[in-house]
Structure formats: C-alpha cells, structure tokens
Amino acid sequence: MTLPLSQPFRESALVREIAAQIREITTQPWNIMEICGGQTHAILQYGLDQLLPEEISLIHGPGCPVCVTSLEAIEQALQIAARSDVIFTSFGDMLRVPGHRQDLLSARAQGSDVRVVYSPLDAVRIARQNPDKQVVFFAIGFETTAPNIAASILHASRNQIQNFSILPANVLVPPAMHAILGSPENRVQGFLAAGHVCAVMGYWEYEPIASQYGIPIVVTGFEPLDLLLGIRLTISQLEAGRHEVENAYTRVVTHAGNRTAQEMITRVFTPADRLWRGIGPIPASGLDLQPEFQAFNALSRFEIQQGSWSEPAQCIAGQVLRGMAKPYDCPAFGAQCTPQSPLGAPMVSSEGACAAYYRYHRVKP
Image (cartoon, rainbow, N blue to C red; front, side, top):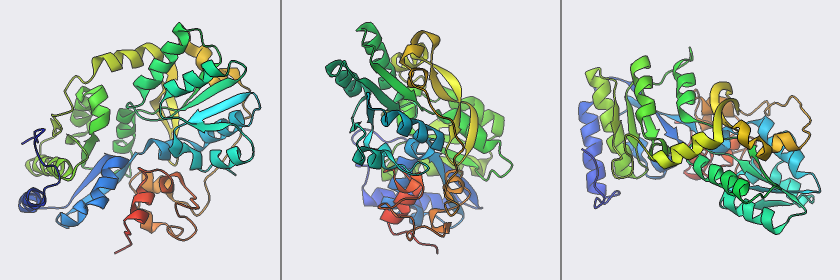
C-alpha cells in the first residue's frame, strides 16, 4: 500500500485503521528508529507513538542537521564571524546553537555582522553587493541542502565572485546509519528513512545497508498516514524475518532519486570525515569541496585557532542523538535547559528531539 496524491494524509479514521493493523500484526518487542527530526516532531505532534502497541519502541535518530553540527564547527563559525571584514550568513536555526561560551546570536549582539538567509544563493547576492567584505555561508544540512549549496559555488565560480566562501559542515545519512548499526550499544532493528533526503538521493544507497545488517528500511514521508504506513511496513518485515528497502513515499521518492542534483553534489563536493556533535567522528560522513573549488572554502581563507571544547557536563545530547536516552532522561531537561536557554543543540532546532519533547509536554512515564 502506498498513498496517492489525492489521499487526505491526516484523516483520523484512516490513522486509526492503520494503527489497528499495526497492533494486530505485532507479536513481540521491536525497536524502530526514525532518522529525521522532522519525523520525530510529526510523531509527537500527532501522538502517533501513543497509538502504537507497547511492544513498539520508537528511537529518535540523529537526523537533525542543526543538532549534529559539531561544537568545533560552531567555534569556527564564531571565529570567522568575529572578523570585521566578514559578513557571516546562516540559516536561522543555527544562530542559537550554543558554542563553548556563546552562540552566533550573541555574537551578532556584540557587533558581528551575522545575517539570516533562506538560501546560499542569498549569500552570493550579498557578496556581489558588498565587494569590500568577505561573505561566508555556514553550509550545514544533510543531502537535502547540498545541491543548493553546490549551485551557489558554481554560480560564484562562473561569475568570478571571489569574496564568497562556505564553512563546510554538511553531513550524510548512510554513514551515520552504518555508525549506529555497527555500534556495540545498538538497539535499532528497523529504520524509517527520511523522505526528503531520499527525494534527492533515491534509496539505492540503503539497499547494501539493509543487506549487510539484516535490517528493514522503509522510506516515509512526514504526515501521520505516511509515518504509520512506514511503521506498519517495517513491522511486517520484522515479523516475517525480512530485511528489504521499501518505498512508502512513492508520490515523492524514486529509486534513483534526482540524478541532476546528485551530479551537482558530486561535481562540487567529495566525501570527508566529519565530527558529529555528541557522537564523534564518522568516516566519510561529510562533504568537503573538490580541489577545483577549494578556493571557496572559508577554512582555507581564514586563520582558525584550534581548541578542545566539550559539552556542558549536565547535557546528555549525545545520548539522545544516538538513541540511547530520551530527552526527559536528562536532569537538565525543562529546568536548566529550555528553548529560551538551551544547553544542547537538540533543544534549539525546530527538528531537535529535546525541543519536540518540550513543546509537546512529553514527560517521563
């Protein structure tokens, strides 16, 4: 079963019907991880987890790009933004992500020229308008933002806009899945893959993962029926002992994905090791610029002071991002750590698990 474009994706009768089907086919405990923070928010917003049988545990994955952007990258951003010759641009969510001592929003309050943009091409436009300034874009996100960032590099290169660069911080989903499944503490038995990432990349990358680890992976969207259908298909595979990749988001996702976007990513970027906040280094899980485009790498343009930084001792964001703890397991949750005064990135982002639990009043049972 897949959902056509004409389907009312929040119809309560259909939601109850699929939830009943899930309860009927579930005979033993299963742990399923939704990769994307957008999926986490939808699950909590619509109370989908509360419709499931108690045997099913939903584990929230590290699929929030703001949350997993490393403390090192935040500190690099703050150092670059502090320069008087720099206009630092970023998506809005990043401004309140805490660094070691401050965030980009407080840096702006102290005089740094930090601006929110909605596209990296906006940053290119700002660079064209300010030829006496260096304009840097904070290149965060999963495969979904990479094509637009690649397009901004290509546009700047073609038009010889030499005062534009990016701070590379993009991350990739498949290596993170390998890291989770290969961990000795792994509890995940099935994955809900993020539909928007698969719209770009397809789901051919996930087939070797399903085969290697013997785990079902189902591509889902973000509406209640999308998510419940994805859970039902995952449970059906688990109960039958199958481990395949299924696409429950056919109205958006194809097996091959968007080849034009993939070619653009490949042309501009190359895989690189990347630090994930709260998780650590994951090999080949990030994107760095190809040698041809290294002139647009802000890390090559500016001298960055290296340091060793750590999260606040009371913050368990790393455990939350690895699916080892729920946000309400953190002693600081809702007290010292709130969206107004966050200790960790998952409380800041609109896709962060801690922010979702706070917003939807989820407390420890």
